[in-house]
Length: 338
Ligand code: FPP
Ligand code: MG
View (tube, protein in one colour):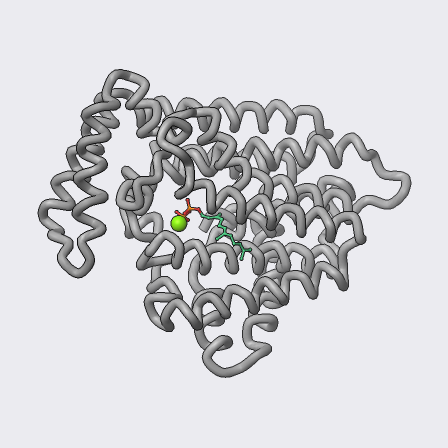
């Protein structure tokens, strides 16, 4: 677990998890059963950890107040809600090392489980956040939804654009990472605190988020399910083009990649009749083409650029144990695909 090397943060995250457990067991019945099981699976808890680290940086390393812990839990609840819905949209079978909720309870119940978490998130935020931060959070949800929709409604040409890809990554991941930092930093601040550091922390989250999502997209194609805990090659099967594919295409592989990707999508959409042998062969072929055309390495290099930007922003903050933790964790997140 990523936080095991940082016992102080681990302890704060245990407090966050206690809030999450209390929230998900609240309704009882099938909702509590499904959500508790999901909430107890291994998770990186990046977003709540970022909220706490930002608050600690603003207060010179003091343990987070209960209010910050509850806001950190609210952000994780929002994230879990979006994953439950995302797995339905993506047709993914696994999440956090177990069955995706919709595979176990059906789409109808899983959508409502996500909605329940969503409602609990807003309840915590309206109880514990300042109005301006609560309204930032509602704006972020809008971005998440727009980016999720744009993944499968992009027109043919913009699907292949690096700029449009980054736009989707920002909306889907970087805005929630930067919000996690912003809420921790801004809520821990009193009227005397340095507003510039709130802005620096927000930018750190934004850059970490872009780098993180690029690596996640590399892992979707090249990762092992037993390490990622989620269904692999979902993007390829859904015809969603991510940076490794786009960069490989820009290196002269576009026509051949399109042919193989179409083959995968056709086979995958033949409901009930997916021939796993042919699907796996086509997936291996596309992986080889991406690797040979430098798509995997190119995407990792791009993630390095954003991680370096985050580190440069970190240098603007006073030296502290929490700053060193952030530096070490972002380096670990980057190395997941190497
Ligand atoms: C994961 O992307 C998806 C997201 C981080 C955002 C999903 C957003 C929604 C479904 C909108 C609804 C939001 C709420 C709050 C109910 P991915 O598929 O690339 O990642 P994965 O590999 O982890 O599935
Ligand atoms: Mg997904």
